[in-house]
Image (cartoon, rainbow over all chains, first blue to last red):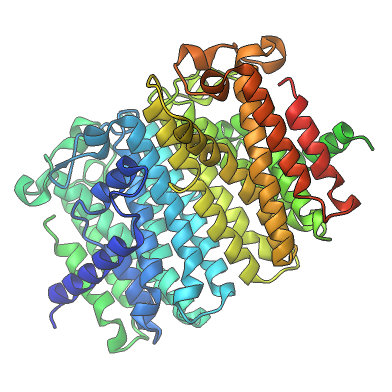
Length: 296
Length: 296
């Protein structure tokens, strides 16, 4: 199976599981469940859950046993998008070609839907010990790591600095802080979640962590580049929004050519970190290619 | 030690621990940590953490071992207040006599501070297995219960229905749904968190659950009554806001005298549920008295 077919297979599996784990759209109170489902099923690439599954497989684990954890990470990612899009934050009307959550359900419901997705993410993680075959100690360790990656030392910290930097000229260190925290932290936690649950040895975990950090950086730089040089049709959103919103980006700070080169370097680092792995890490290698060459 | 001194002792202990667990105000990025601390230290009564501690003591456990979990519940409660106060939600300018989070730090930061408090709550819960002497299986069970209590089957569900009912005439069942979910669910989860971590037997857990559900109901009805008949100075907020905002309340739906009587009945049920406990549950009994007779 080629990489794209494999990614699609996993995305389908994740989507089916998400449909199972999310409260039914009609269950009381209905509107919040509809709002949650709206953003979860708005066409995400499911890269983070794929990283959870691949993290488990890379250390000899079974992907089915970490599927629930993979869904939890995707819910957490979706929550962050819903809240980032809010009028008080990035004030975005469209995402992946569709109106954002608050444009459809109103601001209050979007805040609550985000809260509910974040809460459900931790609930699903706690439930992993029932569906997986691993001990509660691994589950607790994963919850602690995910909470750290999602908190002010990770995702939220990155969003705070991003917001505070908008419209200001910032240095390269601040830009790196934003990217490492806004994107990198959850990529890192995704692969570690799968690997820890599947019983990774410390050395395996170390290499997978280096891999994920570099993959996250490459992903984010390509994101910045696509906002300048991408195809609106394929992206599902207008390009140039970073420039319009005076967002700090790699191309803005380093120039387009240098940004491309930094992304390629990060991709090489990511692949290099997989040197001690065999065919069981081939999907992770394919993911590097995909992230670097993506057009959406 | 009298009840009020005992409650104050516990609140002090909780405050010191919260100060320890929250990121320092100056740590990067500073504003979010300041915003989190602002609302956590805005004069809460610390009733939910007291319930966690008392839940442990009632089944022969040690309060120190559940202190971190008690703090987690208080952070979760604080997050819900910060988000409920937002302009898109209840649009409240004051809480406990102080400007609300978004009035001080702006809307974006208030959303993120709430998100960060919720996230940190789960991080602290996951860390309990290191500080307490109990196994990870109990910790995982508690996280699952807290996530359910905080989600759309609990706290968030209650807030959704509350918002949707504002300005409309609702029936008694809907009002009960709001109170059971908005207040009851977290009271219930608080006492159960302490009891489960401390190794409660199923029967003990059952009685403590009935206790907490009734205590939560009594608390909420008294809250409604204070909004009509309370003292603004003692409450730290203007009275009559429920009426002004056309909020459904027990006094509005049942009349003031009947509301008082329902609160008293709930208090009796709460005390009745403690019949099989000895002096180790005296604080829980005192809490019923406090909740029924409070003026703030």
